[in-house]
Length: 196
Length: 388
Image 1 (cartoon, each protein chain N blue to C red):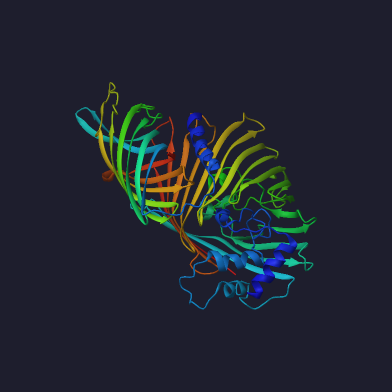
Image 2: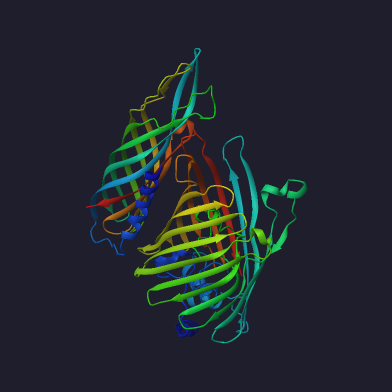
């Protein structure tokens, strides 16, 4: 838990490291490549089977991701892609119930690839739409009462992806969106990136 | 033009720094003292603050082309362009909030809340503004939580003063304020429900009587604020203590700082310590951040050490219009015994006309912990702020 807190402190570190620079557009377009480190949180569904009855239960997945980011920026718009891994955990059910299905800190690895099309609101602020695909290795342990499995290991989603360019090298990312449209499951992505 | 020149000379002469919201650091306003009578921000705006709000921050989209920044500045007073005597500066502020909880669900419900309906008065005792009195009186509606209750909890609406203090500019660099005001600590965001306010005991009505001494160096500020609690509270509930805040400018639009606070009443001791930064980047964009720890030590129980984080990003769209993204984190014990609480507000912050503010945002609250899965909470909010 403390590690997560210190990760959030990292965001503050990015902030304090940033330097005020004017980043005026000099070319028609430019390419940027960088590494992003971020905190991710989204919902998953668990399919439970007990006494030949199937039910679906929501789970919260969360983890730290690292990814490669590429973008081409023009005067007003731009596009890019992002590929990376998320070291994740998931929790479902309630510890307070004795007859329900409860699992905490279920660790798994997820791979995410996304495309981003963005509008440059101003030279330092990009507001984008980012459809993405999430492939995960999430497996749920079965118990005496329940057979459990992930509803899908391939998830499609959509993010409203905001990028704030603090200076030439450092960038802040804040993205909010839907992972599983059917269940209105919300995805969070918050972090920072270093661009070469 | 003449007015602007006189205003600038006046400000330079009395060496007051200036600001609006902390997010306006990107315009070079790193300190609150420029725009507010309270040198740590919040409360009534001074003449300069009113002029800046009207001419620099408010949208000019609906104004005709002949309305210049000078004209907007000149008409920013309480009675518009009618000039009041130099020794008196009245003001009024209304803030209303409409919220829709859990939109789209069966449990969805909406509410309208009058958050603030205040009148204020600043009295200048001399033309150099060395001696001032600032006070406010406002309508305090019955809190929603107790509005429909009965018995002891039932309280009528009442009047409240959130600030009344004497301000003395003892030296060019030193401002001493004595009276009722907000505690000096961290980033003073207008959102009183933000975790860096509500979880630390700096809510909308948590003001205290005390002495705030604010010293401004060439590129730093130091504020000491010993306080004795709110005299309207029962004596055993009053928090008595002291806070200290230091801020240092690293560059033109970058300020970092730190705060500590220690206080106690008959039942509990509080310790808060935090670091913050105000970063302006590009034209109109800003990032405010605050991270800290808190200790709540009940006199008859073991203490809890928690932590919090606050990030607020303002993305400039055009004059008077910003995209606002606010991210908050809180854990009561900084351990797996208590859940991580996250909150994300995302939406529009706008100043569509002078003396007005409009906000529209979605707020998602998420709880993450080992005790199990908790459904997110959702809220749609719109706010309207009007001032005179």
